Length: 330
Ligand code: TXA
Ligand code: MG
Image 1 (cartoon, helix red, strand yellow):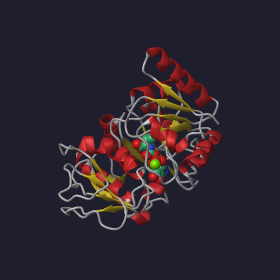
Image 2 (cartoon, rainbow, N blue to C red; image 1 turned 120 degrees about the vertical axis):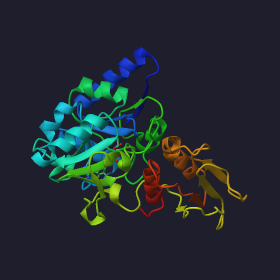
Image 3 (cartoon, rainbow, N blue to C red; image 1 turned 60 degrees about the vertical axis):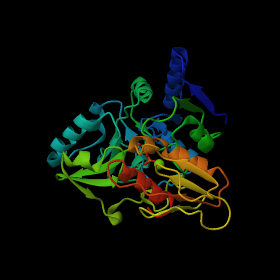
């Protein structure tokens, strides 16, 4: 299969890309689309054949449920059955954070196909704030199931070129609207009886969520069996070691060692390649470039990669979660 990358630099290109994307989605084919977090592989959520094609392209195991992206908040009542006790909290969260990088896991309506939810009685939903994604989903007029557009277990893509590396030859179209603004996947929470259970830390921080409800971490044993929760997810192929906080990085071991540094070059020499997350120590910048920098280090033929810890406040919590998973210790 030939994979086309559709740029959207001019208004004509943009209109053409939207038309092609809507055409393919309507035919039941998956299309890679930018969102504000990472690139997603989107397909018509209410068409099981279309959703199967996502699993095939990604080689994703069927036990891992997908996030459904809604064209508008009106769709929430069609896809979910929100218990009375949680209605007020859900309303407040959607008013505040949608469109945006917050995914809510809610009891589902039977119209959501089993393949989307891996047979669970809940469905994960969000509305993307990406302008082009919004135009495409509004043009299509139906919900889109969209996991990150990478092969199973690999680093999420934040550019069209990353998607091509992952899925080139497996899908028809990648819509290229440049790098994703946020760079890490959405925060996932389960609202239940006044408590927000965090399943995945992300751009909407715990501190922001505390304004709405008590925030707790969902115990691992209560998590559904999804790779997002597996210990080694978002993994580079090169072994990665995450250093404890305030440790001086050393290029230990044989062969070339790469370093993913937080904000300044290392004190010692000897690293074969160094990537710095943010020279100014800015979490937004670090999150936006984290996956590209991991990919660069992973492509350089290093024997191993050493990553510095980031302090766990605000977005730093999501960055550390991804680094732990990249090190196989999530
Ligand atoms: O930012 C994002 O969330 C991106 C963009 C494309 O929207 N999507 C994304 O999807 O990261 P994915 O499939 O890579 O991660 C979705 C996670 C999975 O770990 C899955 O286990 C969990 O959401 N999930 C989906 N439905 C669920 C459900 N009903 N219950 C519990 N977890 C669920
Ligand atoms: Mg993913």
